[in-house]
Length: 434
Image (tube, rainbow, N blue to C red; front, side, top):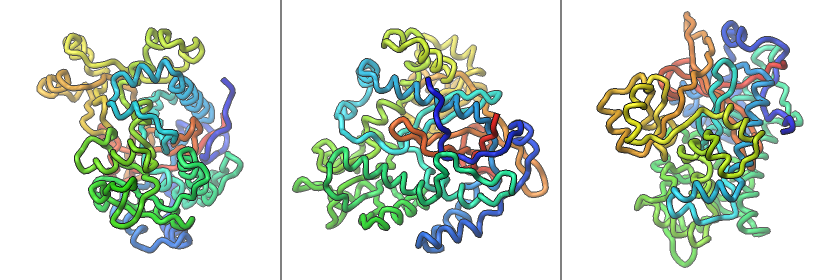
């Protein structure tokens, strides 16, 4: 596979990454720059307050260092996965256990796939794929606001030296491509950003930033709960506003709850463009897909060529379906496993095997779970107040049509990413040349 151009990330100088992640304690004082950026975009001070004051652990004041070779390996893993997902045999296989709605095939691709990696010994292992990954626009702001961290690590934006403005335009173009795939040259007039109780969602500031971005292009935008939508006369409505496109941030990926029936009907009738959509989740983000992608026999049966199989088998954390018949073996090996619900998202109802009680394990055995080989995350030492603390980290690629648009890191303590630890949150990624 050919080497890809690195995506929008920050390129540093030729130094080793491990000492940098342990010993570089620069604290980026980006708050005032962020306030100025938001003001330039016409955002009022309430969005800044939501990000900095109400969510103090959303953005880290430090950055993460990763080698260019490590990034290239991640890009190769993503390219390999995308090549398999495009195969009719793979799609037929995974759709056999997907909800019926996933069999409906829209023309839109789906925005913001999130490919999440742990870097055990700085060797990347994919741990999951998300179909509506949040944080891309927030991270775009963070990159620009930390450009003056220090002279040595001033950002060099590798992909054609993209600016913050052009990255926003990349995101906007992506939504327009989704629309044009379904509607051709018809003008996009309205967008609904839809999530359950959006006013109380942790990522509300990003919803507001997207609203601002869309409205700058004369696209009328609302942020709403799915219960606020109605469907009649071949149109999806928010009050008296006809909705052309739904930016779907819901975690009910099959649109099964009663509050989403208007959206479901409009989607299946092709009367609204939905992105990302249920089929995208079924093809990419169902955790059972990782069982297929990390099993050599399954890949051979699908007709995946040898060099792609090698990339997948070394680059994806091995994953198996939890079966009652394997209970004894799973319990014996639990300390090397991480248990995830097949249809879950984020860290909901996930368990490290070494933390399991027999009661929870019994529940897992009778639920739809996968067991994934535990991949230890790499570490970042961070100055928090007057002391230093160890943080775990993962890397997220925001991907559209098999192309990485942006790479970010998440710093956390505890079992999973949670945006609750002082000093943690989204962090800028600096790529160190090999």
